Amino acid sequence: MNPRGRRRWNRVVIVAAAALLGGTIAPAAVAQETPGVDEIVHSPNMRQLANIPKQAPFDTEQAFGTDIAFTDDHAIVGNYDGFTVYDISKPKKPRIVSQVVCPGGQNDVSVSGDLLFLSTDYARTNDSCTSEPAQASDPDSWEGIKVFDISDLSAPEYVAAVRTDCGSHTHTMVPDPSRGSVFVYVSSYSPAPELPNCQPPHDKISIVEVPVDSPEDAEVVATPVLFPDGGNPGGDNPDGTRRSATTGCHDLTAYPEKNLMAGACMGDGVLFDLSDKLNPRVLDRVQDNENFAFWHSATFNNSGTKVVFTDELGGGGLPTCNARFGPNRGADGIYDITGEGVDKALEFRSYYKIPRHQTETENCVAHNGSLIPVAGRDIMVQSWYQGGVSVWDFTDSANPKEIGYWERGPLSDTQPITGGTWSAYYYNGHVYSSDIQKGLDVLAVNDPRTAPAKSVRYDEFNAQTQPSYGRG
Image 1 (cartoon, helix red, strand yellow):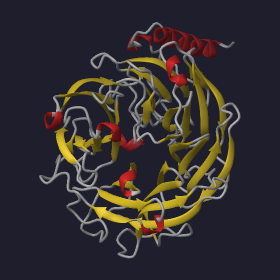
Image 2 (cartoon, rainbow, N blue to C red; image 1 turned 60 degrees about the vertical axis):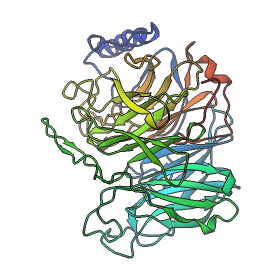
Image 3 (cartoon, helix red, strand yellow; image 1 turned 90 degrees about the vertical axis):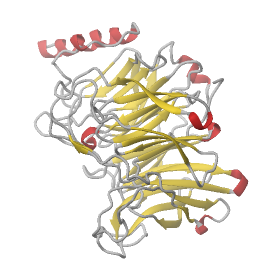
């Protein structure tokens, strides 16, 4: 082993040992030596089981891998150019079942039964899967939600499209069996006077109803205004970054069993009552104008008494996991839900950020994750772009701590290249990570604190539509 390799190995052991001992990994334990290009490092309680690289035609640098949804023994991974269906019945040997070419970006996905929903947030010439890029200033351009029939996962069928104002950056699926429908809550933002299909003010979400037996009849059924006062006006930060104004929502996470929804809405974090699915009621709104730049996504704990909000400082393109930005920026914000009924409120408790500094060529910031289903504890797995995958415990809201990690070294040690893990979710015993450039990774977590999760099984999983497990 050469000296440089030994320093890397020592760093892994020091940091991983701290994780296994259950303590927060102190900044002093983070050596400045970082993994080499594409070098994999991890804590002893995590390992890679498999990787399937992106396949043509999704194998270009601009064909970003995006979000993941799960149905039975399959993972469906979005890509800016379409989506890929993987058979994960053998986690050590996943295989591609089908690929659907349907450019649109971001092409975030969710599933409900035999239906798949796909978000399009880039202006296209029409709503087909053969459309071309268009100018958003063109009144005939199209953005919104696409619906596919996936009863045959080897040959998904495109069945419907619904235009929504400002497109669909992300969406959240909420079934309503009483109506025989699925509601799709569409998050979109960034209106401008010159955009005919995205006019200001845009202080709302769009709710699309998709009848299960006739998805071709999908339509927008409500556009509730969430910010009648306009929301956070935004502003400049001392370090030269900008705090986002609220002009819509980036992401919504529903917890149907609790009749709750959390909104990460650019400059605001929002807690909703979802008893009336067509009229989400705002229970509380919070802002963090000191450390949060862009409220990106949200995750409840299993008991519905906490929300983890993420701050996507720099939009996912900056190296923010470093000394310059410190431990509280580009991080998670942990909020307890206090009060009862209409008096529920969000109270800040602490920040969590991965404790390993990344290089200046690595885009790194808090991104998508999900709970690891352990009754009685709050444990989450989360993507940090080129910061890799972190498993962390926030049972004590004021003192979160990392208990495991897995990451690759930078894509380049000379120039920034957008990459890393977009989404990392726990599903039926394993962690599945969608890497922007490297494809699908399957990871194992072997830790006594997460072991009970292996007994929890789902037939379907969408991270933005949280299921419950066990007691709580």
